[in-house]
Length: 198
Image 1 (cartoon, one colour):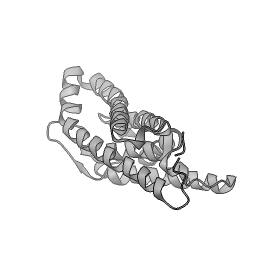
Image 2: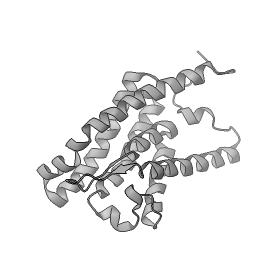
Image 3: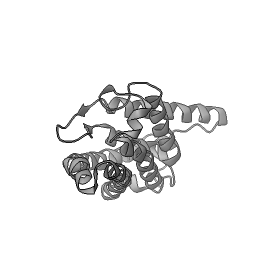
Image 4: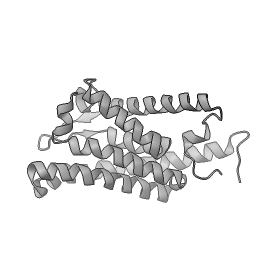
């Protein structure tokens, strides 16, 4: 089993030009994956922060692409949305979104992808319990940014009520899903023809 490499890193070409194209392809795919996942959204009547699929997409992008490409994919996603592409939750777009109630969470996506990507590079995504730990730490990084900004806008108690408590159950389900998916991916990689099963 290879160390210090992510699932997508296993398939990275050795040729320098092809590797560069591969990296660009992954970053673009990662940003589109996040953008599409953001459209799976439910606006809560008591919170400016919608329930979306993009948190899982961000964390998985970090795990699959690694800290560098994962973080860049998130930055590309934010640039796309700020430039006017309708990739933010519920088809929203524009730089003003980054300054709104969800702006802290959007910025926190970069940190979340970096954390999960870094831990994946250390092999944390190869076993269920370490995958759970990586996803929890990635979520924690996200909430540090999201709740800090929301607290600045609305106060800490209200921020926690609107921006944390309603999402705990969904976050647990996302963590469990990742804990199932990633170890299975590694098992499939390790049994493929020509793989190194050491």
